[in-house]
Image 1 (cartoon, rainbow, N blue to C red):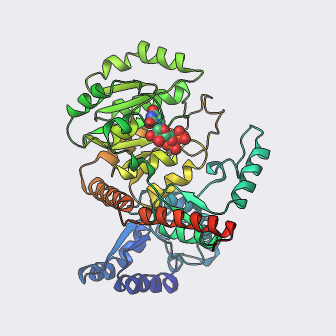
Image 2 (image 1 turned 45 degrees about the vertical axis):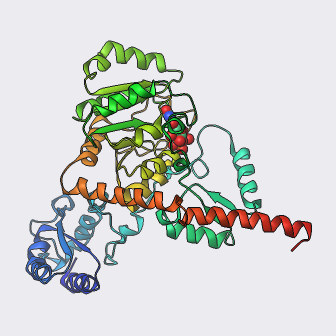
Length: 430
Ligand code: UDP
């Protein structure tokens, strides 16, 4: 943060924008004043550059007012304080990055802002059990799984190439080309009965459920279901229920059992939640016909725990998502949806709650975080509409991939050919 560094950075922003990329320049208010006329002119000339401001924490670091660039320091003996202030920018900048939509592909920063190296994608607490073991002693089982995976001839994946092309390509390199993405598999269920009976018999009459949905406005309903295993603690369930209630949208909330389900049911009754929200809320206790619900045109948002199946089902249904990852690799799936695909907004969950530990009453998500994510996803303004448009495009891609000639269709064909060839080779035919 000195002219000899910031001036060429602004030039670089213009240079990159001239090559057709979208640039966001983040500066403190006084630096913004310094560069705004240059940037304004660049924008008027048609370049995609936006200037965002971040407050400079100079006073917290003992600097006098007005010192937002090294050249404005009254004495260079204050340089250490200046670096302290720069370090204090880390948290607010990370918060800002989380809110950028679409999220940035990369950060280019000056080497004197060293903490950007730590602005990592994941915290240890968000990592799956393999890297962040819980209290249960299942390390030996994980090792067995890892071994089996490494011995497999190839890997069949419930995904589709267009969704995560660069990951599929890298994975193929690691697996010697033997990776077949053949999903989304949920698209195999095309008639309503198949959709309704995936997995379990639904615990709600599907006609009643569809009728309830038919009576809502298109794209207005939030469907909230945290998977087949995710059992919330009563405290977390209350946050979810109140978060849904305080948003203004109709909702379907799936309530799962578990050892504390009686406490949850007691709260639903004693608090009057179900009665209070009966005009716009539908509770499903037990198994929901998820794929059927997601494919209904009146559903406009999916509050999900980011289990991979649910994530893909939401993508296939062209829905934007409210993401609340809980365990396993769900935080990774959330990053894909929120930061890479740009079709989701997180409720603010920060920590993996391993299976078997999630009935502890720990507050991982708050009613305010849930409400605000719902509002952002269901928003009819520019941000919400762009997110919906991206979700729509992905939904179309998902369906195309499964159709005759699509990438997943071709991968199924190639998988079958590979196995047939392998069989012949083993028998010495070819
Ligand atoms: N599912 C459903 N009804 C429910 C709960 C889950 O149909 O009430 C289905 C959902 O559609 C998905 C699967 O169960 O296909 C859950 O898998 P996912 O990977 O999303 O999460 P997990 O349950 O493994 O955490």
